[in-house]
Image 1 (cartoon, each protein chain N blue to C red):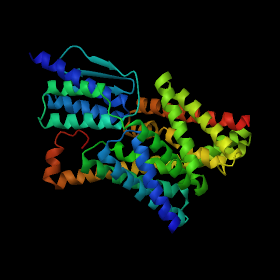
Image 2 (spheres, rainbow over the protein chains, first blue to last red; image 1 turned 90 degrees about the horizontal axis):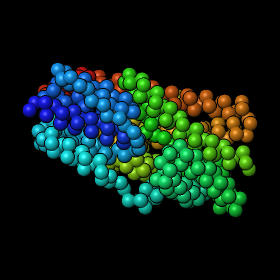
Image 3 (cartoon, one colour; image 1 turned 45 degrees about the vertical axis):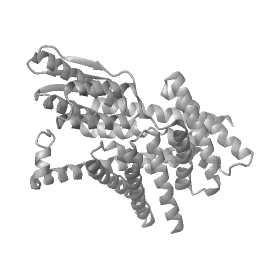
Image 4 (spheres, rainbow over the protein chains, first blue to last red; image 1 turned 60 degrees about the vertical axis):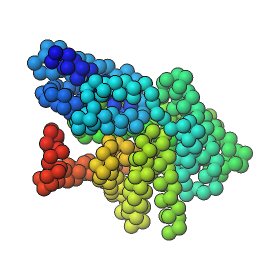
Amino acid sequence: MTNDQGHLMIKTALHAGRIMIENGSEVARVSDTISRIAANAGYPDSKVYVTITGIMMSVSGEENAQIEPVVSRSIDLEKITLVNDLSRHFAEHKITLAQFEERLTDLDQHSRYFPFWLQLVSAGLVSGTLEVVFRHNYPDFLVTCIIGLIGWWIFYVLNRLAKIRFLSEFLASAVIGVLALLAVKYHLGTNADDIIIGCVMPLVPGVPLTNAVRDILAGDLVSGIARGMEALMSAIAIGSGIAMILQAV
Amino acid sequence: MLKLFADLVLTYIGTVTFGILLNVPRRALNLGGWIGTLSFLAYRLCMMANMGIAVANLLGALIIGILSMQAARYKRMPVINFNIPALVPFVPGGQAYQMIKNFALGNVSEAISFLLQVAIIAGSIAFGFLLAEMINRMQAKLMVMFSSRWSHENRNNPRL
């Protein structure tokens, strides 16, 4: 009987950990959450090893360790927050372990994103506002908003189709470069440099970069370097997309 | 003065909308925007006082780190909901773009000078976060020592 409880605990803890890593949490938070779940379920001396591509966990006194691979990675901070809330509720005995597992499955299947039009408008506003903040170029605000919106739209659609983040970033930034140069050529904008700087801002790999620094500082060197590589690849993809267009003109 | 005010309003909008792109929960968006605006104000004041980009970015990142942790404790949410959107106005986008452009056009020496600027800014931000982390841990230790509610809530925390 205790064995069943232990299996359910490991399953739930690994499930929670996988959801958190898949959606862009740092490694220290994941191992902290998993050990808390284990401690609150009555196994204070569990061992857990978390990396960005997989989680291993064992309970002292039991024979086998369990492995949970993490295959896909995206960014959804709301899911991390919800797993965090569920873990808190479990610690306060508001939900049982079985309910916890049930809600995790539910959470995993239904993602609650902002509506697509709001994401598009946000991408446009990020581009426009940051272009003005960085470059103080007020006349190009509107055209930057529009090109940033189109760039994000292309990135989003390609990411859905191809599921290769670097490729989508490369193509989206290339399109942004072409549109910015065209806008200046047809006198819709005044400075192509400023427009491009604003428009690539929604594509900036903010989450992998911040997490890379946090992971390395926390001592999770393997995951930190892997995340740093991810961020660097994104930056190179964006940069080479722009560089290709600038060289071609 | 008016320009600074306009920049702050735009920073707030930019921070909140970047949060929407990352699917930050609705109840964290507003606070994240305020943290971004406040830290950017500190950054701009440092730049006006001619303290150099390194100090300005370090101070900005330090303020983001400290305020984000306070917000995370207040709202009981993971801290990345606040510090990632707030960091967006500090991204060295302009310098990174100039670096790429100069490399693409073959002006290698200019490109390397921009690369160094990007490295300086990134390093300052990382150390600002490190300092903030240190201050947050010290604060947590002090609070556990002096407040019974804190010591009760953190009795199982292995990091303290």
